[in-house]
Structures are given as structure tokens and as C-alpha cells.
Amino acid sequence: MGNTIFNGEMDPEIAALLGVSSAKNGSASASNTPDYSDLFGDESIDTPNQIEVDLTQNTFPEITKQYATIPVTTFSDPDYYKKALSGEGDIAQRVHTILQKFLTTKDPKDRGVYRQQLTTAYWDFLLGIARKTPGKLSDYKKFLLRFGILHPNLLAPEDRDLFSKLIVDNELNQPIYYLDEWFKAIGTGIIKNSTTDEVRVAKNNEATRLKQLLEKAEGRRDAARNLLKAKSDERASYERALLDAVNILSQHTPIPGFPDLQSVYTEVQRRAFSDIQELLKNMAKADRELDSFLKEFSQAQADVQTLEDKVREAGADVAVDIKAIDTEFDSVRQMVKLTIGRQGNHFPILTREYFRCGPNEIATRENVIKQLAWIESIDPEAFCRSYKNKLNRIVPYVILVPSYGEFGICWEPFDRFNRATSRGRIAIPMYPKNLSLAILSAVGDLRWQVAKEKASYYWMEEGLTGNYYQWFTSKKLKGDVKEYFIQDYIIWMTKESDAIQKLEKEVRAIFWRYIPFSQPIKDKLKGRSYIYQELYQRDINRSLSDGY
Image 1: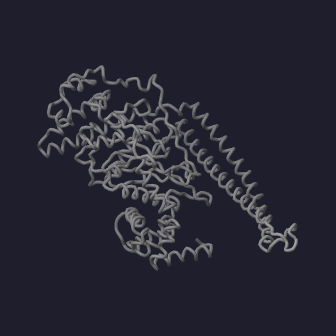
Image 2: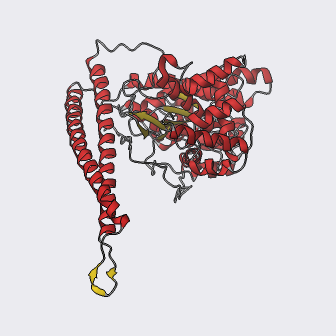
Image 3: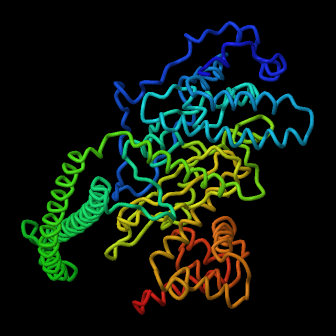
């Protein structure tokens, strides 16, 4: 049937509902519709840049620009709907037909039936667009996939104006992805598929096996680089301390009565001699370790280079992997369902009927970064994982899914092939009632899963999850322990951080130790209540006993 559905006259009632002239739609010719039939043929693949884990980055960038300098004109194009659906074949016709029935029916029961049919057809339609993301995707299809905007006139004029001002590109180079960007990265192999419960068949697939080996090698290389940087910084700190000590030694006052003679060393200066000797020993030790780490890094880098060459030889590096996109698409659908919950609104299209977000409540990349920075200011170890007794800050991949969900979720805490430096994955609904709570639930979920994986078989006995689980069972509570934890984490971040005591005493003690507030918040709280003062003193006692 091709694109013939866009050549006829649109139903007048549909045209009225969408604010589109039916005559204009009737005069549109098929020659104006884009042709994507050779998208993966002669066209070059638009490969995105990989956002590597920078273990030296300690904070999120400051958001200085909320909106684009020049708004996009895509949403004001009267042919948006036609161009968004064009080239997608029979499934686009099905979406168009059901949408007509959904918008025009007066019977509530029929509307419910068409709503369900439209939801199913729309997701099948989106899969076809997702498969095209590694190529040159038009803005119409990109924004449809990114925001769920099937037709701009389904939104109020002020909402269309708002979306036209949003920043399109990832100017801040943070691992936060809209769906079109995410599928592009998956399809081109920049990011590997999200884990599923299915067993992967990799033994007989040489390309897949090489990719897995490459991921492990990259993990070792990144870990070695982190140790190298830490040791270099340690040696530099010793050198600065040495210069300070020498500077102290060189400061003299004239001997009374002998202005041309310098006084002897003071007691403080004499103590500097032993300090300098200790510093020299530490510098020599750090330098030896630095040399060792440099060799480890060089070997790891060589291993990565060798495996990258083999992956290229196997043809598994830049080819568009449609199967990978299909698999990831199924994972993303599950993410969307989880962000919404069973009783939520699962309608996948953005309409004025359900859209209630203000400019600061949409999960845009910039708004999400602001919220993550706020979380990190209270919980500074929210995105940290320990490796070789050193905390590494590793911000997870954040997938922004266009849903009316209420909860952010953690899909995986880290890559099973690279537990040291790989990013976890969290999904955030773009149109929640409360963006802050949606992101807090995702970070709480991430916190729980990282701690659980770290404790492994002993997750019910040790660490954060073990202590919380034991409290949970002692109270004879019913339900999912993780869900209780996430709700308590939200209270910890929003209430307890401001000295509003809402948690159980035992839970507060567990969180104080395993999810510590930043030092300024601790200092503030200890003066607000005896309860926090007691917890603060426990920190001191543990540090003195070296058992913290």
C-alpha cells in the first residue's frame, strides 16, 4: 500500500481535531515524501561518539543554558504528521486508521478498544523507526521517537512552543540519552545491549566473543588508568608538601645585633627535617608504584588495541546491527512499563489530554543533570563504586523514555563483563508528576542493586542490603524489600537531610553509615538534634578504632 494513505483527503473531523486543513492534505503528492529504502545501502552510517568514563571527573557540569539559541521549526511544519509516518509501510497506515477511529468515536467502550489497538500498533511502528536511527533520521521521525509527538496538534500551542525550544544535541557530553540517540549507539556498537534474562548464545559467535573480550580488556585498561592517575596525584601531593617544608626551612630572621646573619633553625623547622625524610621515602615509593602501574596500563592498552583490530577484522565494529536494535527495543518497552507501573497511564503518544508538565518538570537532559547534581550534593557517593580500595565516580547511562511514568528504575547496576569501571543503566520517564521523585527512585534503585551485587551471596547479611534486610525481617514487614528501601531512600534525601526525622531509628543509623550525607550536611545536622549528634560521634569512634 506504500504511502497512499497520505495522498487522499483526511477525514474532516480528524482535520478539525488536529487543526489541519483537509484540502492541504489532499493536495500533498507522494513525491514529497522521503524515501528511506536505501538507508543502509550506499548511505554512510552516522556513528555517534562514545562518552567514555572519565574517572577524574568529580561533578556534573553546571547548566548555564536551558533552551536552544534558535528554536527548531519542525513542530510548526503543517506536514509534520505526513512526514513522520511516510516511508513506514503498512504499519503506518494501521496507526493512521486506528488514530482516526480513536479520535472520532463517541462511545467510551470503543474508545478504550481503539486506545489499546493504537498502543500496540504504535509500538510496532516505533520499532521500524528505531531500526533507522543509525542512519540519517529526519527530525520528524527523531522527535516522534524522542518525545512521543505523533502530531504536534495533539498538543496545546504553548506546549509545542516549549518543545521547539529544547536543546537537541548533547552539548554537555554526559551519558544521558534520548531514545533516538540510545538506539543509534546500540545499533552502531558504541554501547552494548542492555542485559536480559535470556541466555546469550556467544560460544559459536566469534564476533560476539571478541566483543566480550574487548569489553573485559577495556575494563582492565580503565581501572589501570584510574590507579595511574591516583598514584600520580599522590606523588604530586608529596612534592607540594616537600616544597612547603623546604619553604619553611628557608625562612629565617636576623640574629639580634647581627643583621647580616641568619638565626638558627627553630623547633618547628627542626621537625621539618624528619618530615622531609618521610616525604622523600613516600615520593620514592609512589614513583616505584607509578612505574609499575604505567607498565600495567601500557599492557592493558596494547591488549585493547589488539582486540580492537580483531573485532574490525571480524566485521563487528561499525556495521549496523538491526538484531541488536530489536533486542534493545524489547528492553526499552520493559523499561517503559516499569516506569509506569500496572495502574499507570500506558498510552505512548504525547497529547494535551495527559501532558501536565511545566518547563522544569520534563525530563530533558538539562533538567535531569540538575537533579542528579542535587542528589550528589546530598549523597556524594551515589554514583561511586569501590575498586581496589578506591572509590570511583561512575555516572550511569540515563535513558530518557517518553512515558507518563512515576518511577525511575535501575535496569542494571553495571556491566557483568566489567564490574570495575562500566556504567550502570537507569531509565527516567520524561513526563512524571514529580521529576525529582522519579529520579530519586532510580538512584535509590541503583544504590540498592550496586550494594546487593557487591555483597553477592551475602547480600542478606552484610553491608547496606544485609543490615536493611535484617531490620526488614525483624519488623515482619511484607512485600518487596527493595521497594521499601527506595521509599526510605527518598525520605532520607528529602526529609532527613533537612533534619526532619521520618525514618525508623535503626534505618536512620544504617543509612547514616552506608549512605553518608556530605560533610557540610553532617556538620549541620549534628547541631540540630541529639539523634544526629550521636550518629556523628559514632563516625568519630569508628574512625579512631580503625573499624569504619
